[in-house]
Image (cartoon, rainbow, N blue to C red; front, top):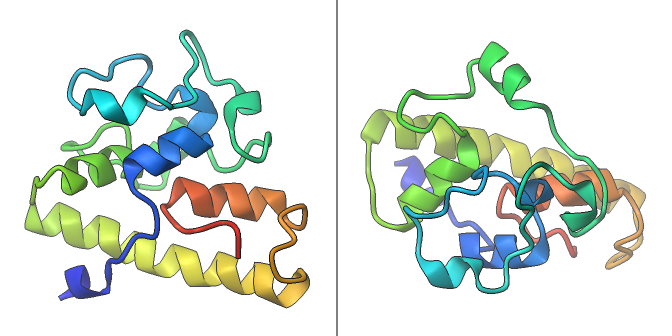
Length: 143
């Protein structure tokens, strides 16, 4: 049912090209994913580099916090973006999909609302942390 509501605004390829997760989400291991996703990706070869994020800002919690909060599944030990990439490629695991889609559904409106309530339309200098977070979740941050 939630799959009907799941309509990401950006593909993994677009996200990687714009700059997400400090360029080091997959820790250099891209073998599982289409090579074309990484042609224009902003990547770091050895660690998270915030300058590679589109908004040049840290946005989000560490994987340690993700684990502590129960956001990591055994199927996707790197988290939501790993799940999204695999989902985009056609993998389906009903319970995991529902869990991650529910997280996505609740994330966007909260942050989009904060931007719309406090920023002029298209002013991407306003609330860059929230915009980078939206980008990490496949939402268009340029609202």
